[in-house]
Amino acid sequence: MKNYVLTSVLVGSVLVLSACKPVDWAEQKWNSAFNQSKDEKVEEKNDHKQHHAEQNDQNEEKPTQTDEEKEQTQQKDLPWLNDTVTVSGDGKAVVQNLNDMLIVANKERNLPADYEPVDLVIPNVPFPFKEDLPKKKLRKEAAASIELLFKGAEEQGLQLLAQSGYRSYDTQVSIFAYNAQQYGEEKANQTSAQPGQSEHQTGLSLDVTSPEVNYDLVEKFGETKEGKWLAENAYQYGFIIRYPKGKEDVTGYKYEPWHLRYVGKEHAKEIHDRGVTLEEYLKKP
Ligand SMILES: [Zn+2]
Image (cartoon, rainbow, N blue to C red; front, side, top):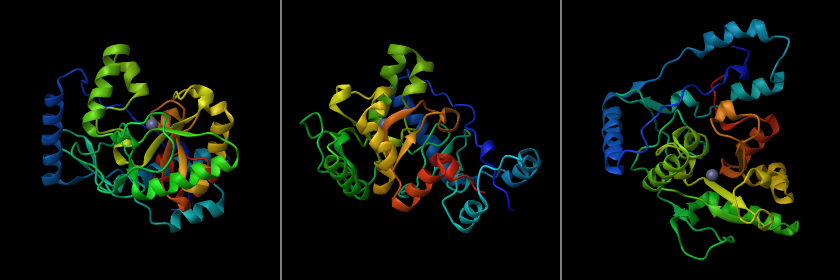
């Protein structure tokens, strides 16, 4: 299997849970779905190879990767998307590689409601608030790396602040319900994650901001010197801009220049250099 076509990577239809239902209802439903999945262990088996083979003829004149890159992709044994979920009784994909630095949670991949990383710590970086809230936390490795990233930014005269890291399943329940009530479910879906589908629950994501945008999480941040520096340099510290511009159909989210995701230096460099999203990077060739 020589060819690897990125153009077929698309995030499909969104599973819609009613976010307006009471919290205990949603949780109960979720827990039972997860328990069922553990028993059944039905593996998702899509024959993507066949799909790619068919597409190759059409796309031959427009290769998306160089030969060298194709080789690198094939040599690697990564936790491919299809290999890291099981499908629960109600058809939901439940993420299995929970402690993996390459874990992927998105609108098609759900984290168990009771999943909380065991190694959460508060990184020594500035926050625009003083309280010791859970959202200050990150997994240990990500926390150590974000401290280095902030130091690197500071050396360039830049002023970054950490706004929001770890978020529990229950907190996400409240956030999504609030957004759905305020702006409607469709808008809430574009801007906030459904419970279990937020990357912040992995403890590997951090939203950062700067005084220039009043500590807000806004698209304008991408045009500030802090935002630009992050886009160009975050990978050197093991982070990627998780929701890039123009990849909304792949990630399922609009451009978020403030949302950093830790994946480790090696993977971050490759993802950055190839200009792909985490979903594209982990699509089995
Ligand atoms: Zn975020």
